[in-house]
Amino acid sequence: RGLANSSDQVGRNFMNHNSSAMLAIDPRRRNDAVYQKTLMLNDYYLSDGRGGKPLGNVQLLGKIDGNMLRANVKTVPKFALDFMAGHAVDWYLMCEDLPDPESRIMVDGKDIVMQWRRSNMQSLEGLTKVMRENFRACGYPIVLSRPFDKRTPSHQCGTVKMGNDPATSPLDPFCRAYDHQNLFVVDGGFLPTSAAVNPALSIAAQALRVAEHIRKTELAA
Image (cartoon, rainbow, N blue to C red):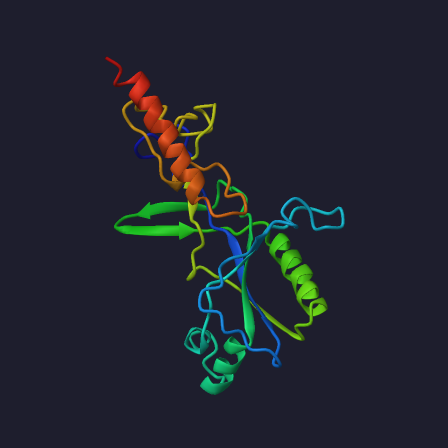
């Protein structure tokens, strides 16, 4: 089973945000922004706005250009892609990937194998639908979107989750391994869920919390 794995949960519950890029295009208006990542909205984080299930987070992307589009749409002429990029407002849609013990990272001989089972894709589909409706209502007649696949990882986390029960979690709430008292894991692996936002600040906050705990309990004079 490997190190600190009496729970058989090490490597399991791999999560990677379900995400899409969306372009709201108006051929009549040019977008000359250089760095436009200045707006985020959580209007659909807790529900779809109509009393339904949570969807996710929406935020601006840093400005794309024709070369970036060409990497994904090779059959469209470059001048057309430049025009699209120059008249688009670029968005990033992000939804939670729910924990699943069968979504996992494994070692097979000398190979590392990722067995990622995506979940909650209906939330991404719902968020894409409602944002397409919103942008068209705002006057953008063309709205294009494309979901990210395995080649575009988005905030990978999980695989060494923390919890209160050593039978189901490798780490305690202070990220200490239940099986090895001198082992702490403070990267994104400890997260029991991916939520639907960038986890960087949560990871940093937990690392500071764990460091303070170690200082008080292990390094006290």
